[in-house]
Image (cartoon, rainbow over all chains, first blue to last red; front, side, top):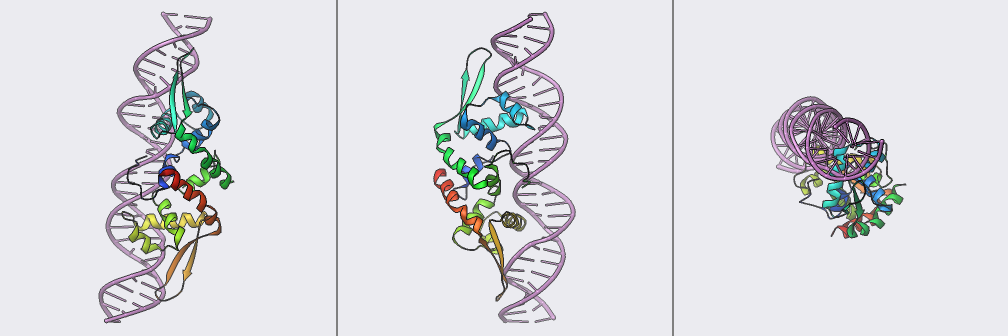
Length: 99
Length: 99
DNA sequence: TGATATAGTCACAAAAATTTGACTAATTGA
DNA sequence: TCAATTAGTCAAATTTTTGTGACTATATCA
């Protein structure tokens, strides 16, 4: 991602949501928590490394919260954070404008 | 850019505005027509090829209109298109949310 | 005990995006 | 006529992003 010097305010959000898998992951996370292996199966053509990287960045950016669910076979859920939720409306607008 | 298969509606706009120079160019075009050499000087660290590519893509995507001003020393202006103008509000929202 | 599922990491390879530097072509001003 | 400005193009090199394949670690089920 290489953030740092942003020359234009809109670049921040644009960068945080750009990349090959982030938009799809963010979209899935809109309705319910997402998980590593589930995403791997849902997003065809994806791979462990890319999903791991995308999840890590979305977490670092504060859009998703990583929570360990210590039950049965150990689950880790990525859930929309407070900050992530503030981005939902604009994300939906992007969808509307696109279509 | 490599559009084609979009798995998520929001990806279209996200991709059209992503890249190292497009956000800045789009932002400058918000207030007045932009021009090749002017951008080259304004956007420090940029280069002919990148600016040319960004302008061409923004034009192909229908966000900017390329118009030849046949006066004095030959000018070419890139102006926000109708479609480009419909994106102004969401672009400004991205800016607000970023800051 | 061995197989399967969870959620990853690591080094390297391949692909895509960006930059460099040389070159083109039309027009203007001295 | 020569130099400068306009707006680019092209091929090759570099950088960034994404993908591959092997491997780790914990827990469950048969």
